[in-house]
Length: 499
Image (cartoon, rainbow, N blue to C red; front, top):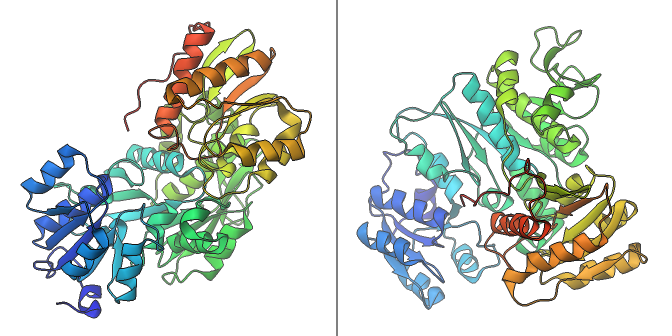
């Protein structure tokens, strides 16, 4: 039996992981990556999960890892682990996590484990850490593209792309990992010391998991802990600035602001529709470096305010590793947004149909809604304990109508009644998940006028009626193409998700 102090001292691929008794909670992509890594290191493992697909269960058997699907609490206690590694879906209130914490057993996430094992390839990569309520994935992809254009061997990983544990086991290794971090992953993270880090923005989300706005904010703030070179924050979001001010960082680390404002001498911002860097200019007190223009960003679908903000944050992160302005500009010219992010899927009769299924919380939905003047809004799903009244009130004047989907419809309907009492509001009440989007599209088409945008920006999670946000977006696009007849040949339907 190892003590908590023994476990805390484990760091490096060559440390004494063999024989360590580890319980892995959850068997999704993350859980399997944890089990696979620790099995390679010779740990004694059990995976505890309420469910497992046959293929993954078979793989565990091949690598010699025990899988338990029933009586999880009793099995965990009987196993008596030295360490518990949790998948992101397990909140601290979960009975298994609470038991381990109560016993004084260390509880890590996959990111904590990956940080301690990052020397696997012998090529010690620097980490760039990205979090925020909205815009994480786009910012990670932008930063990765900029670093690749600058000649770095780089990979996007974490909450996007591949698990970090898979990335650190790549035989060739990387110069840089650009790591997307959810609040769930950050909650269980303590040791990371990133080269550069950013919290893009902060708005209430995942309150059902964290228990309070304060706990959610505290988890997000962990991204800045022990940062070595640059803490990048949002000039237009005081919460992110306060996180940086309170963070314990490596001596010499700088605070770098980004925003759609005139930049100061340690900021990246806008001057007359030109994206400029004053933070990494040798003469930043008196001059700035042009990186791109708003017009160029508009040409590649990055011209909306929230997308420009993502570009600014990514540029600050890239400049922290000395990527040249020319390479940043080149990466932006070639960049293409993922599907399900303000993606136009059709235009018919003067009505534009836009899929922003990735808007899984009110903050993201607000960014999407602000991009259009007159909207028929398709909204709803799993609200995750978040209040939607402010979102509805802020956008009532731009709405032509609303179509409410999902299981948490009542709070939305009540918010529309309170803040937009004359607005046409329709509920999709079918229990047949295959009919949700066709019904939503028909209702939207009935109320939309020429010049309107029908916008799928659910402000909610998707797992009540769909596999994930990509499935939700694909079904919306397919329903639009089917019902509207694919009237615009220049706007293809969204392809099948890679998720």
